[in-house]
Image (cartoon, one colour):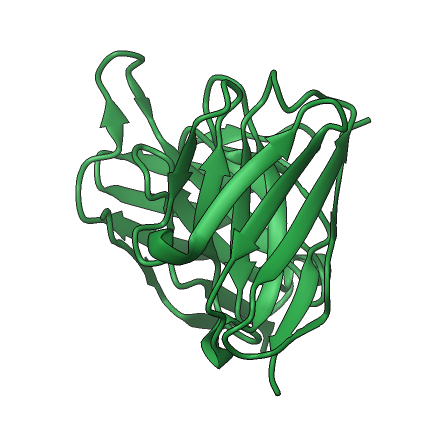
Amino acid sequence: DIVMTQSPSSLAVSAGETVTINCKSSQSLFGSVRQKNYLAWYQQKPGQSPKLLIYLASTRESGVPDRFIGSGSGTDFTLTISSVQAEDLANYYCQQYYDTPYTFGAGTKLELK
Amino acid sequence: QVRLKESGPRLVQPSQTLSVTCTVSGFSVTSYHVSWVRQPPGKGLEWVGAIWKGGSTDYNSALKSRLSISRDTSKNQVFLKMNSLQTDDTGTYYCAKLGLYYPSFDYWGQGVMVTVSS
C-alpha cells in the first residue's frame, strides 16, 4: 500500500497569513502514460463531508478560490493557502489515487491563532 | 445536479452486519465509479472500497474478508455490507463519486454515522 505522510498535523494561523501543508508518498504518484500526478487535496469542515479542492496535484476544482494552490510531483506535494481567511479553518487531507487501495494522509488541522 | 445520499442503521450490535445504501442522482452508476470512505469519530479518512462503472469491485485489503460492495443499476444505488462488526468500525460512512478520467472523489454524500455497540 502507498503510505501518505502529511505534515504538520496541526497549524495555528492568523487571518491573512500564508500556510503550507506537506504531503509525502511512499512511492511516486506520477503516471507515465498520462504524465500526471495522481494526488488530490480535500478540505473538511467540522460536521461536513470532505470537499475536493485540488486534483492532479495542482488543478483547482471548479469554484475553489485561487488562494488554494497545489504543487509538487513524484513523491512530494504541497498545498499552499495564501492569505488565510476564517472560512478556511478546517482539516485538510491529501490522497493518492495512483493505485488501490487509495490512501489518505492523516490530516492537518488548521486553527486560528 | 449530482447528489449522493447514504442511508442505514445508526446503531449496530457487535458481530452483526452493517448494510448501508448510497442513492445517487444526477449521474448513472454505470457511467461513473463510486467509492466508500469511512471516518472514525475525531479521526482521519479511510478508503473502504469501490465499485467501478463496469461493475467490478476493489476493497481495502484490511477489510476485504468482511466487505461486499454491490449495486442496483435500475435504482442507481450502491450498497455496502460489512460483517462481523467491532467497536472500531464505529464512524461515519461516506459514499463518493469518482471523476471519470482522474478518479479523485469529486462529490460526496453527507455520510451516515454508525455506532457499533451493544
